[in-house]
Length: 259
Image (cartoon, rainbow, N blue to C red; front, top):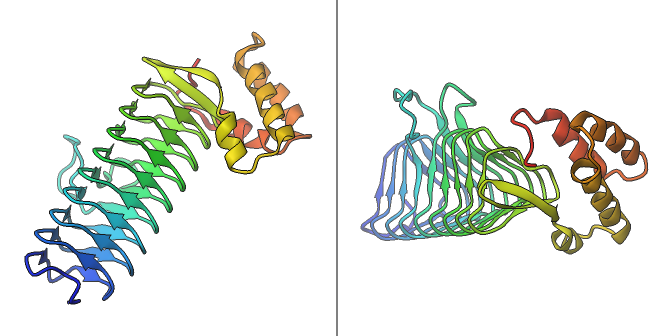
């Protein structure tokens, strides 16, 4: 083992850690865990079996990663937690493995900023460049797409999808899908315009942001049915490719969208 592993850490003989991995005091690494180069694990972290962690992650103290899913149907099957590269995972986070009733894998992408006390339940899929503020929690089978931001204490119901560039307010409770670009708030969450400031920061042009605002009005303000709105968005997409992200999401939503 690397000299960067604290003497009080417990590492299972079947765990695979790159020689550059750092493990702090009293952390426990279980069997069938793989951790790639440059990842740093603070003290008092527990990483359970069948967890794969990529490069250059920073995992703060008291987190529990890869524990069995909180699902009464779970019977000990060898499911997975996969974490990509360059993620920050702050104190007291809990990420569970998947279940065989779904994908069998809970998956976190790259470059995510996940603050304290965040819970990711079984079979969730997190994209890249997301931000989860303190105490945000996902029930099982939730998808969160790239660049989404969940405000503190946001709660997402199982099987919901959160689109790219979405932002939720503090204390939002989400029971349906939130389309890309939308700002949502409340219990239960309602749409409140688009995340224009976030789009500016990510390099969207003023023209594209204007067209996205018009697309939002098509869905939410013009009194159209969702099917009628989708037909209009298909026409708008011809002049603004960014509308395609919204249209694709609406075409694949199964729970219905926040209204």
